[in-house]
Length: 602
Image (cartoon, rainbow, N blue to C red; front, side):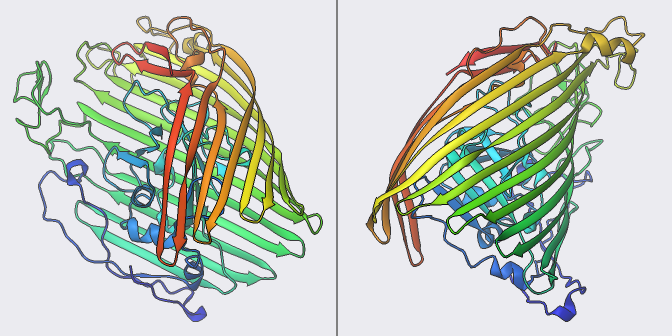
């Protein structure tokens, strides 16, 4: 990717050029028209500010002195490994050992990925997975996970515009006590946004490609104005379909805006940020490889050519009124952060945040094997308020970190299931065949203490303790709301099983060691534990039958040891990891009835 420095005079000049957007791996790509068109590659050019160039100076991926295994993905890594308009997950996958990514559609930033770190996942996947929210996702150190949601605690489509970010920090496992968050099981991934430099500058990226795919993003740095430096960014990405169909599902598209202002003062720094994302993801379902009984291109049990990759074709998909899925996300995040030097050796960090999210899922599946429910209307909303504060105390042979955080979450989740084959109970009829409504509450309070001890110059030992308290309350209000929402529905199933509550208090210890063998070669070892609450259905969310809530939170026991090397252009890490998860809950949803089954797992 080429870069063009912009002077102050060109602050408001958009440097426009041709571009290329990701449409590789067309086996899962989508287009807006039914006829096949040749792929078009029209290159890529962009204007880039000097501020962004400054962000690239820290290009080391390996932190030799860290007592845990980490990977730092630089801005240059993001640009080199994220095709225009695509998801930053591609850059993480290209640079992070043990990281796996599976996407639901194209590599566009508007499509969801399931991501795994050392086998532990976050993001939607097929039913029956034991660990749904196993990795903590942060943005500028602020948590993005919804701890109550099972299949949709976080979606990568909430961060669709890669040009907004200056780097990504990945911590393997729970980390040290200071690094623990409520979902830090497999690891923690922190997306770091860009900041304004001292001088005004701007950039514009524009891309386009085949299958009606295009994207644009921009970033403006105000420079220093009375000590305040503000960065404003926005972007849009879109991809169509490569499928052939009588009636295609719409494109997947996503937009985002971000504003951050900062000011340094004599003894510290203040920053405030606001982020908004709107994503509309549309996709047809996967096509079976071989024909199945009764399945034709015209519907289940309807006469017509068989539906499968070997008969109707790899790129064929049924009409959208037979088979489609639509996901809509709205994400709002605001935060304030303050760092203050209380003395020459004591520093205080604190942050306060609020994140709100809305998600709507509409699924049509007319190919269910035992038809009862073939259409879902599934809206959810959440609100998350949090605060974190901690002190760093530097002493002659010790660096002490002490602090904690608190977050409370409210989560409203309702589900209406319709049957297109039952007259009067189609989507929009106000008479679902199944309905549930849950209002849930969750909170976490954490206090930590860790001490980085340096007994000799070549050795650091970092023991720590994290005291964690969780409270979770699942409240089934279906019997209250269904009568008002669906007064004339006489066929619908409205489960009235009450939810459950739980309180857990645990101590999570950690010990991390880093030893210098040579200036370029370090050995490290980490042992840490962490706890999290299980998925919401384990406590009765959407239950059709009474459940017994877990008596213990989910737990990880994590060991990692290895070597780190960094000298000149050569960097590397080699490590051994052993991790055990216990007290998990596996959720299985029966598609035809929406009955939810929860089983324990270790």
